[in-house]
Image (cartoon, rainbow, N blue to C red; front, side, top):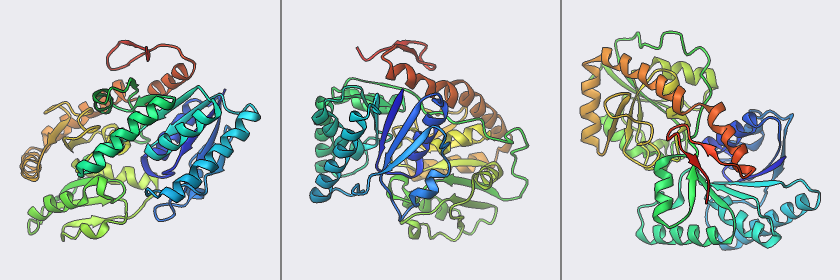
Length: 374
């Protein structure tokens, strides 16, 4: 089977999703048609993480991040041309679209070419990404329109699945998953005197660095607290509290070591598909303190492996409680690891996509229920 993946944001969690999928479905051939976001990471660096024995890459040169009518029409014509060549060469058994722009333009192109076996994974619904009621209405309309063209929607979390159901879009979901983190059985306890709150990801509006900074600012002057943001991004200037350290981008092992050294994993995201970084923190036995948003709320068992918060005050209160009871965090961290193993295992969850591609029903590992689109 040849699976064609179309991905505009060839970076961060979406690229990791496609990478994970190609690894698990290693017996199949994969063609990745990708854009590039040089301001975040160059495409050749992303490709290094892929197993190139079963993955080929085709650049989607005209794909751009922002909505631009002229550039988006160019991107549509280019993706149509690429898919037309692949279809003619019989290298297009399945088309899997990743993220909103790829999902919209890709479904138009597939409809024009009569390609039937099409799937779309939002990895964070576009209509959840804005506070503007007008933009939210527009993005919802585009999702409904594109869904009528062709293709089937596969969400990466139950809460995202529920948001699409509200739009009347027939969908299902497969939980994201991560590999068992190397060296995770080593002690993960923070041996320093400081209570370390850590997060990982791009510093962009979606991750709400402004809220992260407000939370950290409360603890400025209290030398036994420190905040660490692993990553970088265009909104790094919003993290200006004196007790925040921005590490920049690090290799995977260095990231794991930093997360293991933390006491609590904090996410202030406005929305998620299902965060790979939070899942890796679970694998590393971390208690989670996550904003109550789509994607985040799926992985929290309130008071068991962590907590959800709805505002700055609630997050600060929880951090103080955690700092006064580190032994409780160790128990929460162990439970995080157990939940990750049973519900968010990469090998188990991503194999489900093969059944979906072939039109077979599959067993949901969380609901123990047989799912089909019909």
